[in-house]
Amino acid sequence: MPAAGECRKGEKEAVRTGRENTFAIETAALTKMYRNKAAVKNVDLKVREGEIYGFIGRNGAGKSTTLKMLCGLASPTGGEIQLFGGPVSDPAVRRRLGVLIEAAGLYPNMTARQNVEMKARCMGLTDERSANDVLRLTGMQDTGRKKVKRFSMGMKQRLGVALALLGNPDMLILDEPLNGLDPEGIRELRQLVLKLHEEGKTILVSSHILGELSKIATNYGIIKDGELIEQITREELEERCQDYFQIQVQDVRRAFALVQEAFPDVEAEVSDDRSIRLYGVKDGAELNQMLVENQVAVYASGFHRMDLEEYFLDRMEGGRRYV
Image: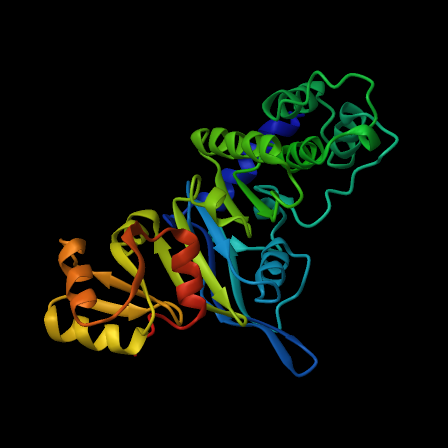
């Protein structure tokens, strides 16, 4: 009788046979209705193998619902899902997927090893190396007899990832894994995700902590009101996150008109009722002097670079705003 690992390898090859699909996840018009309201609307999500895909959206935007459908935890109302070129209902495909959605489902009165060994048995993994490997990989191998109820939030999250890694899946789906973590816990989980990526795993991760997400993600998807409004690579994001010169002034409308007249090649946008962002400015002192000479009070000015958080908020508000 072949070993469990050999069976699993054969199943993987069966999924790949005859296909040269480089997508780990591909959806078409994916939709989920709750009564008469669409939580997810016609989402065409594409995640290539080997990516760390950052899934971004406000609370209620449809992130968790989308992830649950990808994992088979919720049934779509419409549309299609393919994982590694096969349907999510295919057991061979499901075995290539590790999931941490919401709580990890840990037993508080058990140790880390006991939790891992119990899930391993439920999955039919009888080889002790399976538990050893995931505990070592997530840095949980030395927790000894300490019960899970005494773990920090960061330790619980890493243990949740360890459970998701059982069976050595090719892809992980992590829903808000940074929630509630202190800076040390965030750093530990970030390092773990990068390590898993180096080993060739595809990772789809949602998070509200965009500064941290920008340190690990290779690609991004932005969802708003159930609709996927943009998919963008890290390189494309860096190109769009231009340097800009920002001024805070007393009279935004007058300052905006003066800038357009004096610097016609400069692209300007109003970011709030006192601030203007200017793209293409080379000499900030000259611009400040022009405004002061025209009796527009300048409270502050300086060069900045847009980051992921600013870009996300800009997309949520429908793009740049002009007077």
